[in-house]
Image (cartoon, rainbow over all chains, first blue to last red; front, side):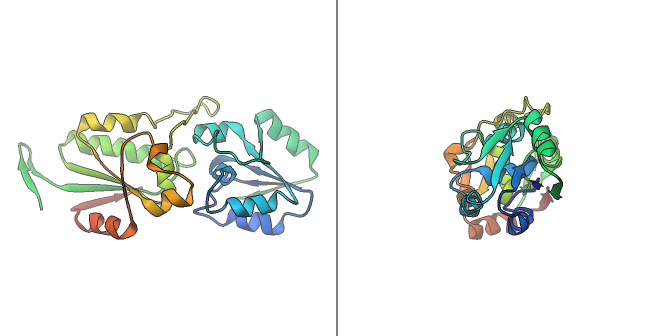
Length: 99
Length: 127
């Protein structure tokens, strides 16, 4: 399963809910304001680090760069471009969008 | 509370910004309205709360998104005599940011001080 999260983790519960239901080995792709969750040293960084032990976490690079977070991405979170987004969709059996 | 100017009475306007840039149109729309208000020689202040602090983050590069990067416009506000920018201390800290990570000089204030600033306004516009 590929999960996508497009909401800021500071203003919405989408990421928290996503991580609650994301099973071992699934992938979480952070897009739009969801990419703020990829930053180091934030109030939610610990939750994301915990999640990295059981799921792959990706962040969409154009969204990361637009928000000025490109130098703050925590270790373990992989950046993908639009082509990488498509690859992730193709690789997984289904996509769950946590809107 | 108000002062006389050529056009009449200048009111105190506070623009409250609570949204991150690009995820919605609010941040850009707020900035447009701020510039309009400034042209009418009002007494303008800006407050950045919660995700609103992200509007001021350095290093924004929107080439990949193909939308306008409006963060440099905050640096032009000084030319419109808009110099009172207040940023919520708790919001910065929760996001691992400091004043040095922002594109313009700001006054970092705690929630109690921010509440005082809000209390002192004639008009508050929320975005």
